[in-house]
Length: 403
Image (cartoon, rainbow, N blue to C red; front, side):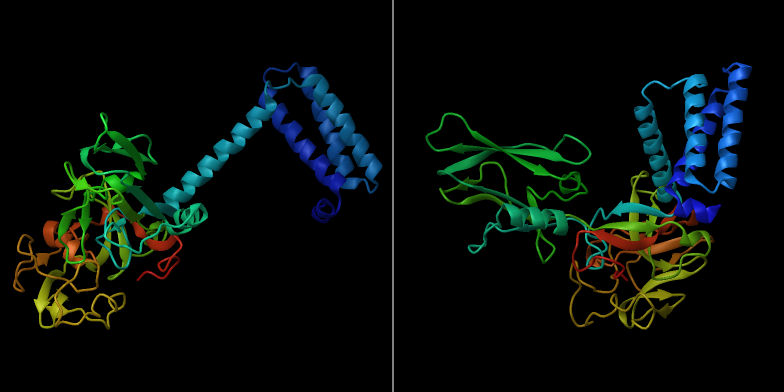
C-alpha cells in the first residue's frame, strides 16, 4: 500500500479525500441524522477497500467520485472554507514556531557592547570629520542594510545656520524609532526639520547614536547638540550605525547537562539586585557553584577560581587572555578582566563566594561591562541557554565562530 501511494497519483488523491471526508464526518457527527452518518461511512468503507484491493485506476477513481458525491450530499459545507484552512495552517505554524522557540532555539539580539569583540552590540561611527567619506548609492546602501546591518544617516547644510532642536525618540513600532532635528538657516523665518529613522536599539540601551559617540579611548563626546553652528556644505549629521549581532540561543543542551565554564550564556536578570528585572543578559560563564571567584595580579587581569588563575590554556578563554599585560585595558578589545573601584572586586584579595546552584559571569569587554563584579552571582534557573549561531548580520562573526 505504501509503495502504491508513492507510485500512483490516483491512490494519493483518493487517500487524501478519505482523510478529509473522515475529518468532516467526525466534526459533524453529533449534528448529522443517522442516515447521513451511515451513508458517508459506507462510502468511506467502499473507497478504502478500492484503494487497498483494486489494481486498476478507473475503479479507484470511481469509488472516490462516489465518495465525493455522497459527502457533498450529506455533509454540511463550512462557510469560508479556504479562509478556515489558511487560518488553521497559520495557527499550526505559530504553534510549531513557539515550540521551537520555547524548547530548541530562541532568537536573541545583543543589547549592549559588553561582549565585544566576541559579539557586538550596536556600534556607531561619526564620519563628519572624514573628508573622504562618501555614502554608497541606493543599491550599496540596500546591500549594507540587509546583509551587514549597516545604516547611513547624512544631512549636509544648505546654508550657514545652527541646530535649534533635537527631538527625543518617538517609538512608532517595535521595529522603528523616529528622531527629528530642527535647523535654523540664516535668512529663513522658519527652521528646517529633517527626520531620521533608527531601529529601537539605536535609541536605547544607554547609547544614543544621535548625540553621543563612544570614542576609542572610552570617552564620550557630543556629535549633535542644540545651538551647534555650521557653515554651508558642512555635514550636520553623518553617521554610520551598525546593528548588534542577532543570534540563536540553544535552549536544548542545558536540559541534558549543566553549563560549562567559558560558555557564553543567556540568562534572565530576575532577582539580580540593581538590574531591570525583565531583561535578558548575555555574558561568559566564569564561576561555577560553590567556587570562590576573584581577579588576581599574578598574572594580572586573570580571573581566579579558588585562588588558581584561569589562562589562555583553558577552553573558551584563548582570546580573553591573549592580551599583552604591558598594555592598559581597552574598550572593545580583549583585555582580560579588570578590578573596578566601584565593584565587589576592587583588589586581588576581594572575592565572590558563589552560592550552591548559582553562577557568576563576566563580559568579554571588561572595560565596559556590567557583570558579576558588580552584582555577584545569580540562580541557575535564570539561565535560558547558550549562544549557538549568529544569523545576522552577515559578517566576520556570522555562524558558529564565536567562542
